[in-house]
Length: 224
Image (tube, rainbow, N blue to C red):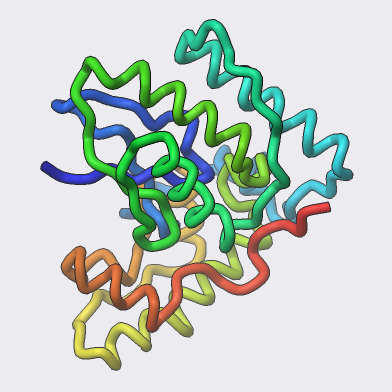
């Protein structure tokens, strides 16, 4: 049985049965035909992370958690105290420990939380654990969306200039990167853009992440 991966960005969509994965996400953000409509919102040139104070961040997180509980029909809700917001470097390990405390055997793979599929009869229990860990070990809710354009451009440059050469130096042949505009268009179109780890076998890719890196320094927002 394969494993499923849940990131901070897509945790709210992680659930499933023995036949369906709990959820998956590309840890590194195909090409698409260029259009004029995709350069809006986070994809707009110059777009960057919104600056929130703590109260605004709490309100955004509470709305996200409420929407998840309603979507998964979790009732009654447990009485939980929200923990401090964690950045993308701290969150995966803290989530892993939270899941393990609740009886689910999970691990950290490539900066995301990975755990086995579960049988149907455990899906409600899993949803409750997901809710519990969203509250007790919250990630910055701003990262539930795609990277803003300024940071996506940094990520592309990092993949091309740092990660890809490192992987090649480790002996793996990988395809040349597309142009920045092609990569961005694919990323913001919800497709799977070029990823230098894409042609590396799974276990080797997880090891290479530790050597070659994954995310550009400074692309995540500061937590107030």
